[in-house]
Image (tube, rainbow, N blue to C red; front, side):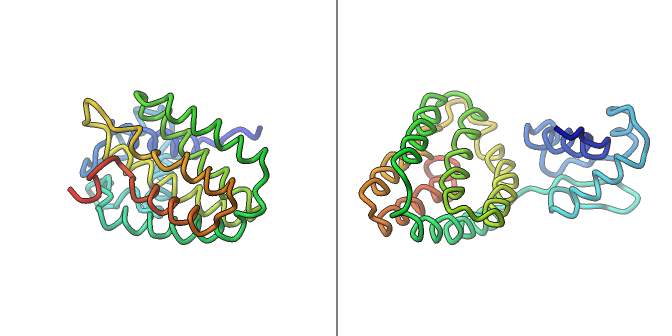
Amino acid sequence: MEQKSLKEQVYSSILEDIISLEYRPGQILNEKQLIEKYDCSKSPVREALMALCAEGVLRSIPRYGYEVIRLTKDDIYEMIHFRCILEGGFLHEICGRITEQQIQHLEKLDEKCRAANRDVWEHWEYNTEFHMSLLGYAGNTYASEELERCMSRMKRAYAQAYWDKTDPELAFDTRHHAQIIAAIRKKDAEEARKLLVDDLYDFGGENFLTR
């Protein structure tokens, strides 16, 4: 495996700190603090910060620092709408071609997802793998890359949805997985697509998108 550059390491560290809410939405980061924290020169820190700005994670405020941008409900709706079109469209197209072996793989991921109903990030990883696997059966590399990019941004929204909850409703946002699998097994493409859309709009647990 190719070793990450210093800029990539700093980028990953800052992003993970934002996702874990060590750096919260609205908080200001500055280069000096990050240089000290990561014990490196200005160049990789600045490059990482500019990359995060380009991706809409941070906003540069001249002579002040970099603000952590909060994802709004509108942002989340747009990402879900994108996923409905991307994932739903491909699922409708390939539903009849998904093999029993692939279906069994989805069932195993769903079991792991439900078992991780008290660990926010383990649950998220299995849920992500479920959706990446399902889209991956289409064999379209570009589509998979776009979904992976979208899921990376949605991970931040997931943190906002669950971080302050003492009893997160993790089972709720994957309740349609078994139904999706059953529809795929029946080769009912339209039913599978509809259930997938319902699943995507369950993001963040019951009532999160309507609060």
